[in-house]
Image (cartoon, rainbow, N blue to C red; front, top):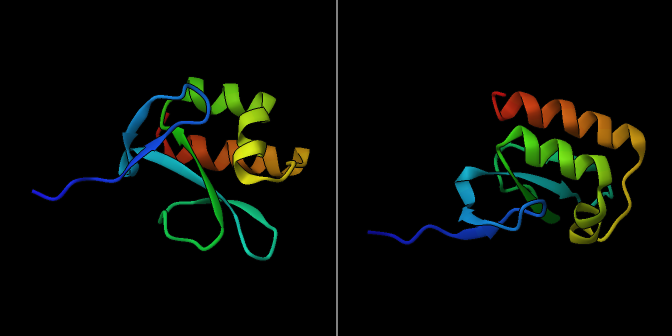
Length: 90
């Protein structure tokens, strides 16, 4: 049996399988977006598929900004919140 890669949620800091988390990526072009494939090039950060983690972290964006090594604008935060809540099926 192949071992699944593990990643930690930037909001709650729990370690889970990579496929069970949502990935946000700061692309090589500097654009921050939700990465449904988990394979987009650039610096990535992960969040749980729970509404609590998504809303809590995107409200503050401290750990997410640190993980991506870039500050997020309010427009990026709104777009990420909408896309990630849809993807999480909350």
